[in-house]
Length: 269
Image (cartoon, rainbow, N blue to C red; front, side):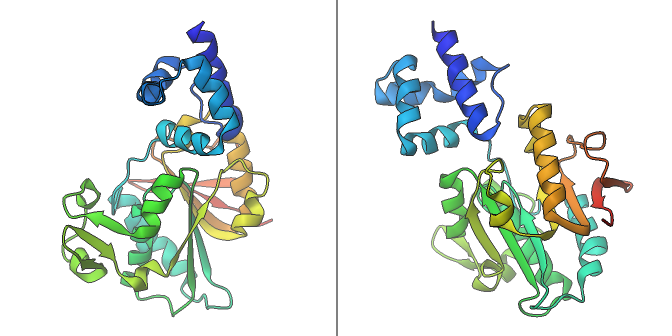
């Protein structure tokens, strides 16, 4: 009985956000077991409860999403952005800003890193860059918007020397991202499979969606790749995780290979 109900819960999660636990029910069970005990509900009772309560649905999403991230993650990819991609957009102005979408931004380390790199590049004038950061998980999104990180957090494990002093204000037990970095980033609560996603994000020049597609099945990856293609401007760029590929899925993207990375460029329409 529990396996049947667990399968139903996995199907509900898949229908809502395409995170695929259908072939890994034990993992789903382990992620929700503490919540069932906390609520003193059976799996069958919980399955009905979560479908009728939006707040509980948010909690379920918190439980089943993975939010591993840190500042300046994947140094080689960031160097490619800094040295090759950003300079291509150096002539943008506040009337036609460089627009970057950090999809699945988790607790904010990645979009704030991108903003710090904008400052470090000295390529852009005031208002000529916009970073949109979105996530389906409201809890981590709230943390990202707060821009507060514990001094002992693993978020700082790859932080280059001198960057904390330059881009953070020191509080008692935490560092807070400075205002000039925070104002470059706009956060949105967003499900990448929402029908209104394109309207919410608008056209962008660069998308980073790293280590997210590994949780989707092929059909869902095709949907996401199609949405990305529609949202990215011609000659724009898409960065995925090193274990993710859409090479055989969307021929509209050209794969660019470097000695330490590969990423995608959208061709002219």
